[in-house]
Figure 1 (cartoon, rainbow, N blue to C red):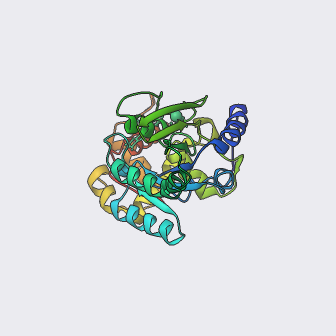
Figure 2 (figure 1 turned 30 degrees about the horizontal axis):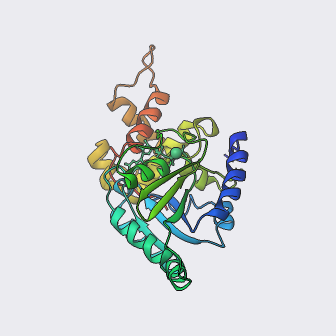
Length: 278
Ligand SMILES: Nc1nc2c(ncn2[C@@H]2O[C@H](COP(=O)(O)OP(=O)(O)OP(=O)(O)O)[C@@H](O)[C@H]2O)c(=O)[nH]1
Ligand SMILES: [Mg+2]
């Protein structure tokens, strides 16, 4: 499966980000904590290369905490500044503010040296769709300013918001690159709702989810899906879940489509437990 998904509004979004990036001091690159490396967008990092960057692993509440620690270490070893957040509860926001302040410190000192007033730092929030950019902005502000939603493609235009006395944030629309060539990466992006629903086959994504559970988190298969003999092929596990959930068609056949939809929904809501994919 090759995911080819580059709607017209993304072309516009990319142009807008490119134009506005000149005005900012720091680019906060949001990544999904469950698969931060799979949702790094090289286009965005290229556009930001003259700016200070902060990597924010958002949705940490849905990720395996040990894996998140490992991903943060890996990014820091690459010389990046990185933090993790849960934007729905506000966890990690203090660390984020601290990291932003220390990234801005050299510029602030330069302003003081030149006898200028230190102005608020301007931070652009970027990343692939649906990873929580607008939710992150809202939680930094402490009230709902930007529209959010469970599907990719919610934010269209740009918006600047004064978050605190010393920080201004700009929300941007989610940006994907034109084509995902790596099949597994595509499945991860689909699983995380980063690419839209038309770009993939639900069954392939659900089977991939079961494979990941089998190999990385058999305890979640057992505890959340009540599957004890999880070594069987993913197709059989899917049928078992369909039977358990009573997903039947009129003639009594299994309604696997329904099972796939409900499994993906459960994963996305965190009902299958905390699972990381990278
Ligand atoms: N569990 C959890 N859910 C989150 C978190 N941050 C955002 N969400 C949810 O993720 C979904 C997408 O959030 P948005 O803030 O709209 O994402 P976005 O990156 O602005 O999306 P686009 O504007 O479409 O690119 C919403 O359902 C949010 O409630 C988080 O830290 N934890
Ligand atoms: Mg948004």
